[in-house]
Length: 151
Figure (cartoon, rainbow, N blue to C red):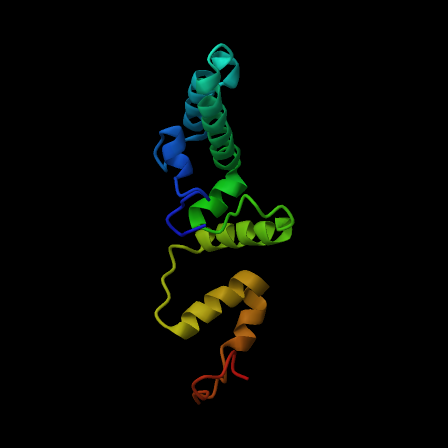
């Protein structure tokens, strides 16, 4: 999955459904229903040549809807880390979803330095109590460059 949000076949799930990235869940559902009715393979039963194309489009529409209608999958897709072919990757998906929600909660804070970024990450992972221990010596001395977490 590339960061731009392309599906495995190179198309975007949003464009498959003909919606904006900021679409609400009801807009996603409405677009899906409209396209599913239009391309349902049963509508092409009398036209075998059109049935193959209809089946392909219907499957692609269903794939896009299954990702965009699920908030967790949609967040991962938007972040560029969702892979629809990885079934055994649920723990990673759960972890990434949690990280994305935590990062969104501190999004307004802008780090001034690498140390600030590390401190923000530590606070997200461990909470505020253990972050104080990582801030380094309080006697005004600086730690050597390249050391992680003051070690």
